[in-house]
Image (cartoon, rainbow, N blue to C red):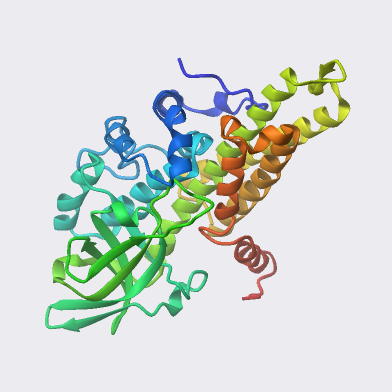
Length: 387
């Protein structure tokens, strides 16, 4: 049986379906048995544990937003629980899971042709192929509409030129969903990464997301046929639909990181003695543990409700912005508090806290910065755009 977490203060588990609990527990066992023992070494070396991809496929972790093609669709709530469990271990591992599902398999299924679905979805489900999502560019992250990547049509073919940056899975991907400007507007293209003119270069010297194979994608006269064009990926709306699912995943992943830091601080405070008694007996430490659990509980409840709204097809994008902003902001505070409770040991790999803190610093920027989500919420509240 997987370890029971002691951070579910309001009994959210009782609100889950048996299928959701079973799926979460399968992911939790995978994390405890296969991921936690090896993740520090990969973080230290800055490598992604690619050997885990087949195991993730065996567990049914790929294709969770897809019906058919051998995939098993699950609820959005269950997807969020998986992100939380993977985030408890490592943000780079969770990012690979999110990108494969929300940013690659979901758009192929939602906006692709039958041929594209049959060609890619079975292989992606089995882990025989990995995908990446090429939207952000070196000069355009928060404003993707200003992208400079172009796809020029020559007969029934397209020639792509441009650069994409901060692309998760980029250097291990077999297919890249590239968003580019055309004469008909922004379109999505499925580019086989073996195509001449396509190049993925890992981003080096990262101090966060070290396990994530984050890359720069360069397209230089990269020619693709008509079968690469996603028929229903027209404009940025489809891209934002994908990002909404990914942002929900980030919100849940951040809570997983926060729970890991809280658990480390709680365990340490019960064992570490100062002046002849455990530091957990001191009011200052108890107050900090209480605040950590308070914010975890609030974020869990917010994410649970968001998951149910997504399940009902009723979630609005400002609600997703609020969850992402809140979860990451509070998780960063929790990680810093945990590091302080652990004292000097807080920077050691054994307790995982510093690793989570580094990753959360990156998470505050990816899938929309706090400032951008603040403006989204401000516009929703007032009806006035401040962009």
